[in-house]
Length: 102
Image (cartoon, rainbow, N blue to C red; front, side):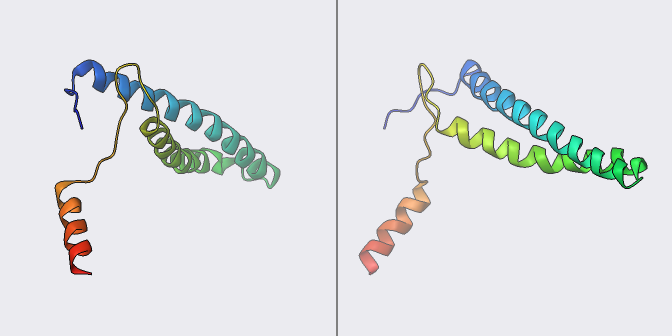
């Protein structure tokens, strides 16, 4: 398999692709979750907890948003390249040992 050089431009392209996706999904999901939590806490008279729970929900939403963005980018095809996950030398060796030992 041919490998391309990891250049600053290619790295920045992948970074931007991950960044904007995770930002958008975290913003939308965080705003929705924050709105629901804010309304729920205000309705029970605990508006003082909105800031605390809002931050916590923000973190809880940001992590899966970041993972989703990375997963999406791993399947994306760019103009000059795509990102491929290939087995490491150790994984290939383990497969050979497993296949020959069985």
